[in-house]
Length: 252
Image (cartoon, rainbow, N blue to C red; front, top):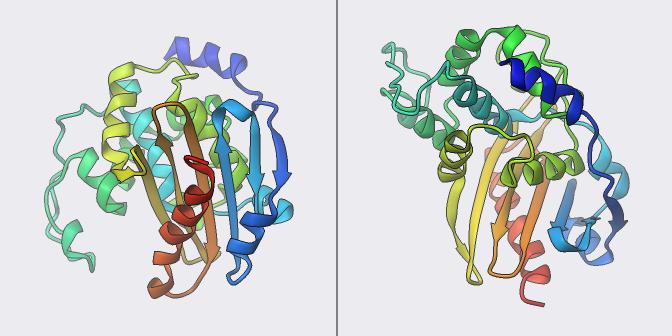
């Protein structure tokens, strides 16, 4: 923990990315109230569909499970093989109504597991990690689950910055913790690349997220898609827009 507090001062400044509005991404996002950010890492340029929307802050929803899980595992407060016991309460989703590991909870976006994780960590410890990660506005105040209804906000461009630093272990966390979360985000393959992603939906500000990256043989591409929607039927657009953006940039 002392080491991480030192890191708070070392890594408090975000990378100086060049941000460019892309006409192609703008065209993809145009039919929807959406923002797309896409980052081919070797170029040092984050391409966005709309500069204003891509730099505005929104509730992170379940994309916050990425930094949350990293904090839990790196601190040692949660062990990789810990099993969270279901209390028998029906939470409206069959995949949540069971015992599960942290990896299961990441994959299924189980809110109740991360409420328990947050309480085990405590606000002070979680604050240190969120500040060290320079995660959005770094404000985790508010009622639980604060990532769905509280004061934490993050932009698509800030999502890209965090994902890049997480994947390259810029934060110098326990490597096993990083690999654990990466494995939980593993989503399949695309054009010979390995895809990692995490979804999220916060009804309070209508934010539907899909964030992640494509590990390709010669490049890593990071993406963040945010759509405004009130309908669960529209959430499939998150992955669709990310796929359309990837189709443009990968293997050009």
